[in-house]
Image (cartoon, rainbow, N blue to C red; front, side):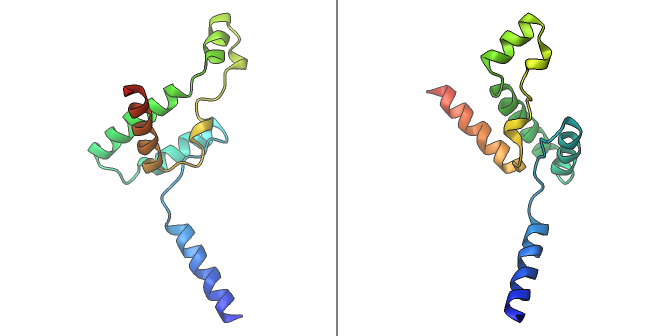
Length: 105
């Protein structure tokens, strides 16, 4: 029983120490989680993250989104945040690097 409790406490400590993640469940949740993600960043880190975030968000725009916007069907647009759900700042920067690399080919 003590081993079980010790393992549970260790797991809870590790979860509490993890990097903040983006929450794309709603626009409000995304904005709140974004503030947590950038809270401890210096100016250089924040700029790198912001550029990476824009790359990843813009890459998530589909042809269907463009068509819906052109026809005025704004309700049919997909959320630009969905594919960011659960990502850390490092995940976003890594994904942006992958996108840049794929576009360079």
